[in-house]
Image (cartoon, rainbow, N blue to C red; front, side, top):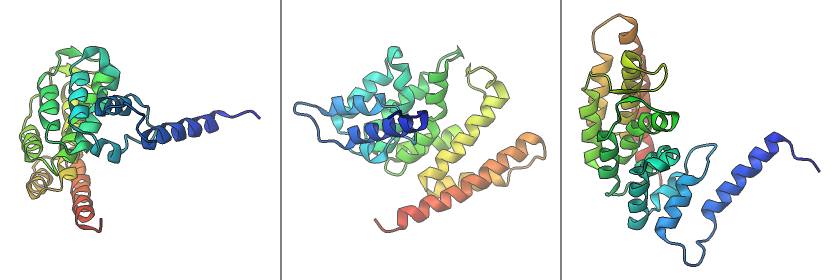
Length: 219
């Protein structure tokens, strides 16, 4: 029986999911599991429960990979995993990655990882106040980054990252984050950029409310 492209994609996703929930092979370490987690291709996002189960050795291994340019293809997944992990060792790794931003044009892997930093920090901020402080500080910055990706550069890139920061603040569910979002909603200006910023803030306010409701809901 021939298997069509759609069926192959579903089968591949099922196999990847099975691999994540299968029992740990004899001799496998937390570092091995962390590496396998971020090397997998996901069709619906990296599994939060698997990231939350990372141990000290797994977090340390992700830090090594995040600092290795040869592992650039995994950096987006690593950023996601660190954010979902809630591990106290995750923030220094994300902070270092953010601080070591390149200059000039970056490739797709770097753009993917760096544009996802705010959301990862937002998730981590639920258990680590340092991540929330980072988001609040970054949200106040107005200078464009020194890197870009294709047409995503200058003011356009700054706007995109600002929207990601608002989303990260919303995902934190913190009262201070809600205040920062409300400030953006009340900011003056009628130009296209200001209107786009307020639309992003309106979305972030709704997301913040949902995040708070989810955190207070049944476990």
